[in-house]
Length: 333
Image (cartoon, rainbow, N blue to C red; front, side):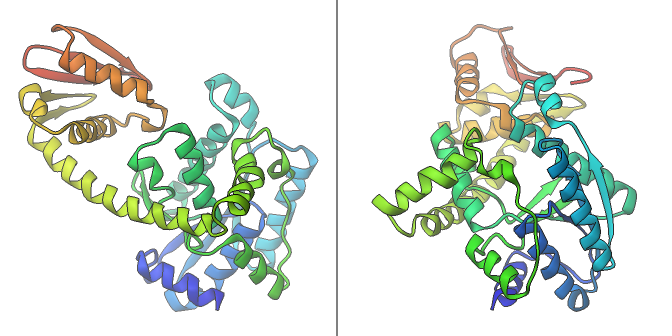
């Protein structure tokens, strides 16, 4: 039974506690509509206080406005409060020189944070599923991601003091659509999901079907299982690296220093994780760091003379002196 499967996922990852206040992201698509129905069915069991949120990304004109009206109507039918907002993601993407997908993601979670702050909500539920997981892992493999990236979408993730939960992460898109059909749930179709200009759509519509046909009919299941295994191993190594980082660093506001002698004694794989901990400590955007950035830092540490510097995304500077590696974040960055 679909609800029982989702309930097991929630318990497995401890996604919900009694009397949680939950913000549910509602796009109007099948995933988010089913997610909202599942939360409503669990409302009494957990004593949940549910608020819905809908963001119009400004991609599709009247179609987007219809999505908003649909979500507002659905929330009213379910007797839930909903907060809606419209943003011009294409313009934001051009201004920040990032992809449309990245701009949309940043704006969406910023919107969620604003609502949570106003309404004293600590958990945000979003509708990612097992198919999304497989697609994400493939996209990251194509980009050459390491273990962290290949760990895929985390079922539970911290976000600036908030908790992102993904109750549908172990259910397939087919199961979600089957639940919607069985329960006569209506939803919106996002036409942008049909456009092959977006990498995820090409992976979904071209690459995965090709792999299923020619290599492994269960490729999505395999990728999702791999992601879970790598995520568990990565979480262990990250915790170990953070302990190492604390033992060799001094942290101040917008600056920290890492003891180079202690740092160089670490295995190469651990050195990279320690640097990630340092950057995360200064709220650096790790999503923008490339393999080339890591190679520049390695060269700085092992080969360059004292007082050398490497500039990194997000206003982060790394400076090498005789005894320390100084990591700074520029004011206002």
